[in-house]
Length: 133
Image (cartoon, rainbow, N blue to C red; front, side, top):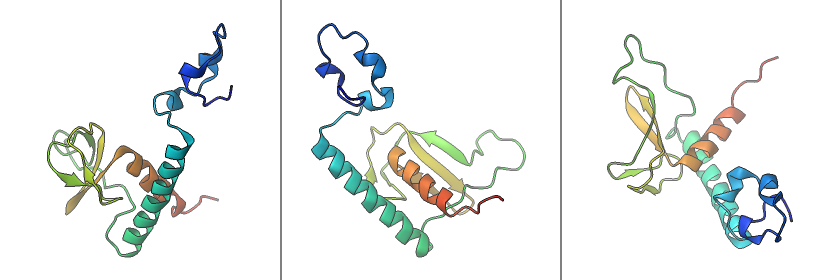
């Protein structure tokens, strides 16, 4: 059994199987076909992020921290989608049941991301950061 097999396929009596599973993958296990679709969607999202960055439609830096007291002036928030908003990375609507909407609050606007889109945005952001010698 490989490290990413779903837990329901463990061999009888193999009580160590679950210990070898990658815990992050147990909850989001999908068949290989879905994983290919998911990977293709990620490539499309990465492409959208690059296009929006080149067009100046997507900031690739974190907002400046607030000056003074922090209450009600956070510049980075994780919230739930209370209203209809669109993801700044993929452009798709953020469903009201999404509880981990990542928001970056700038002086002139807010960028919102689905959880996975935020990870892809962050990967792209880190690629363009200057390397330290």
